[in-house]
Image (cartoon, rainbow, N blue to C red; front, side, top):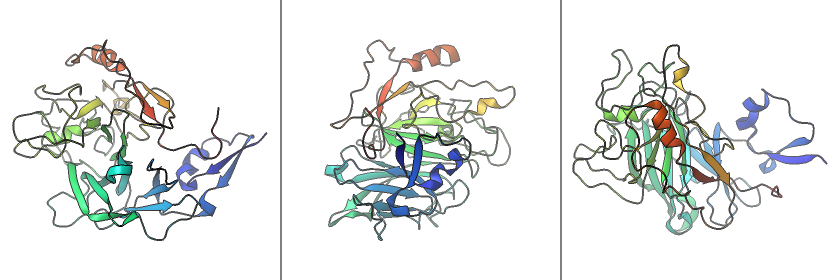
Length: 352
C-alpha cells in the first residue's frame, strides 16, 4: 500500500527532498489546498482543540490554516515592523505557552530591526504576546513584553528555534554568532567574564556568551534586582524571566545561569529529532584544531493526547555539573534525559 503523506510547506522540505530520493511507497501531496507562503520556517499548533495550524514566516507574519485547511486572510501575528527578513534574519521561532488555552500567551524569537529602540539591528529578541480579548485568531500587538535580548556578532547563524519542554520551561536555541568557524569562540567557551577575540564583529559583554548555547528559562516568573549570574539580566540584576534551579550553571561565577547544553552552531528542530540531541545540527568544533565540549542532551519523543509527560527521574543525577572537564561534563549532561512531546499533531491516521 502506498503511504499518502500531505506535503506541509513544500518550500520547507525542498532542500531535504533534493538530497535524497522519495521512497517508492510514499506519495507527497500539496497541503492546505496548495496554498503558498512567504519564506515559511516553521509550523506550529496551539494545542487548544481548535485544529488550527500556524505558519511562521521569515518576514514577520504568522498565518493561520484553520481546521478546514483554509488560510485566513488576516495574519495571526504581524511583527513586520519589528524585524526585517533577509539572509538568516527575520522571525525565526514561535512557541505557544503550555497553558495557551487559558492564558493566550505566545513567545517569538526574531532578529531586531525596530528603529530607535536602543537594540542593535540584528540582535536576537525573545518576546511575549497575548491573543486579543475579542478575537482568538489575532494577537494583540500592544501586549508585547520583551523577555530577553541577546547580541549577535554577525548576521548569520542566529538559530531561532524555541519550544516549551514537558517541564514547562522555554528552550531557546542560539546559534554561534555567525561568520564561519566560530571566530568569536561562542561555542567553545562558558566564561561569561572573558573577552572574545579582538577583531571586527565580536561583541563584548556577558550576554554574548549566550551564543552557541541552548538556553532554558522560566517565563512564568521574574528575577528581582540583585546579584546573580544571569547574562541577559538588566544592569540591576533584574530580569523578566527566571532560571530553573536545576540549570547546570545556576549561581556559578563566570557562567551564565540561562545555559543548558553548549557548543551549538545553528541549533534547529530541537524538539523534532528522533535521535539523541547533540546541541543542534552542527558544532563549530569542526574547525581544525578546535576542541568542543558540546554535550549530548538525550531526548526521546513522545506523542500524548492528554497533558504533558513528566520529566524523567533525576534523583541519580548530581545536583551540580563538573566545572570544565569535557568528559565529566558530558557524562553529567547525558544523565539529564527529557521527554519532549512532538510539536505537530499527527496528520491523518496516526501510525500505530
